[in-house]
Amino acid sequence: MKVLYFSWIKDKLGKSHEEIQVSDNIKTINDLITLLKQNNENYKDVFKDTSSIKVSINMETARFEDSINENDEVAFFPPMTGG
Amino acid sequence: MIKVQEEDFSLTDEITFLKKRCNNIGALSTFIGIVRDKREDEKLVSMTLEHYPGMTEKMLNKINSEALSRWDLLDTTIIHRYGKLLPGEQIVLVITASKHRKEAIESCHFIIDWLKTKGPFWKYEKTVDKGFWVDAKSQDLDEELKWNN
Image (cartoon, rainbow over all chains, first blue to last red; front, top):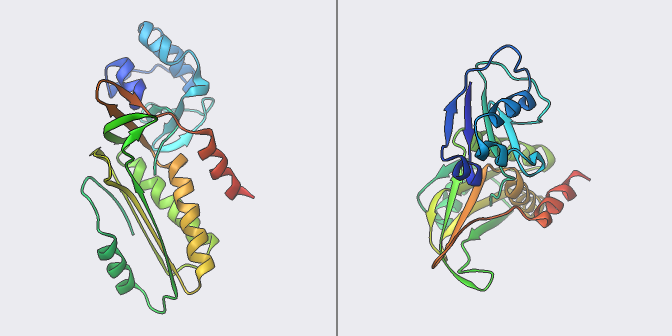
């Protein structure tokens, strides 16, 4: 699964994207976050308060309880500041 | 017409292009967002706009379609820049064209309000000695929500 990071999340993790091997028990965004938090303290810090971050699945805004599949592109970012 | 680009744009040229694309225009409304020269009281050196290529075009198309469905418009132009911008530079352009003024003015206001909170852009501001990711403003969310009524 391709996972992308933007803004301060990218800075905190030191990467803009990565490929994650997901097993069958990763069914939702929340499951993916639990998996990512096992990586290191930076991931734990980024995902400690999910009310301050947003998520998209295949470039569509999504919710943390939404289902994901192996071929999806998931992105994490703070609230948008366009315009 | 939607464009996501690094380069600057010309309001005059874009109005000319839009007028060539449609007939019987009675009203044009325009909005241009500009990089301010201060961050709070500090001098701003630059503002860099990061975006999510692909999702940006998708979201701008959605916002544009929503405007076209809510108002009787002849055509629209949305241009949003990304990359490093200096104080005074143009960030975003919205033009809406209609037969009568109300539709053009309201839809232009709607598009920029939705771009603020739904356009996948993130602003990084640099002052002389520091850098900051700009936080989303709750006021912008209120402005977006008012269009739900």
